Amino acid sequence: MSRVYNFSAGPAVLPEEVLTEAAAEMLDYNGTGMSVMEMSHRSKAFQEIIDSAEADLRELMDIPDNYKVLFLQGGASQQFAMIPMNLMKNKVADYIVTGQWSKKAYAEAKKYGKANKIASSEDKTFSYIPDCTDLPVSDDADYVYICENNTIYGTKFKQLPDTKGKTLVADVSSCFLSEPVDVTKYGVIYGGVQKNVGPAGVVIVIIREDLITDDVLPGTPTMLQYKTHADAGSLYNTPPAYGIYICGKVFRWLKRQGGLAAMKERNARKAKILYDYLDESQMFKSPVEAKDRSMMNVTFITGNAGLDAKFVKEAKAAGFENLKGHRSVGGMRASIYNAMPEEGIKALVAFMKKFEEENL
Image (tube, rainbow, N blue to C red; front, side, top):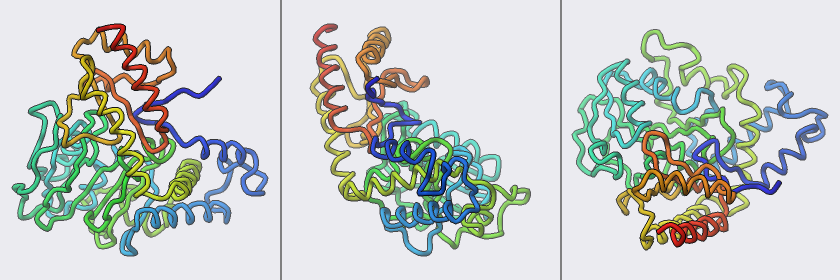
């Protein structure tokens, strides 16, 4: 069977090169006579895997020495609690709510202290990013929180908010490694890898060292303290070893592609093909304000639920998988992460044009 074009928001498409390499090493990794799936996380072979993965990620993102890279479990959703548990020294934090995930993070933070919603785009179904140039940042806020790319709604912060000197914490799950970032602008930058980096089961946290302390909220479990994992080099307990191994392969693949500047150029080109068609189509529309459109998650609608369902069904039959929008918003969504080839976008647009001709 030939491979489909997989537009899933996550777990999502991975580079074929990486999958082929992993398949070749499935029974015998690097002469060890065993799979990475079977390997002790305390072994020399695995230590080399995690060390080289971290080194490659540091190189790709130009991560400064005063930031720790942690390979953790629990997904981005566990970070919704871990962040306030570790960072809420004054028991105050400010949240910018631009979608379901920042909304959930905000709700979770309220369990641990005073969480303030200082900006939101919920009034227009999260179809835009609010103006964050002059926010009512709390004087005693421990941090300001954003979800940088909103997978469900297809929006992206093109400019980081002015936090007025407060620590910026960002969930970058669905735009991780899609373009260069200045890590020094963040106190914490984290993402579940299952969208743009690797298989489900790993969350990568990049955190400034001064934020890693013993001074956490009373009752914080040992496993939910950043210091626990930082001190143990992400090996406090058995890590998601195979997931880390695949992430490492993706990092090397990204380096071979020319790094994050090259990926940004490629991703912008791919997204333009789809958005240009949506802007000229009589049937399909993007519900997102043009200035805030995501390069990674492109949402679109016909305005007719029956027609949307027909499109998704026929697209699947034609080899375009996972185009149905999130259950909370409906419509369609094409997640076009790093590993989605440009020909996949062109094939999708050709199919959409044909569908439009047949159904208008």
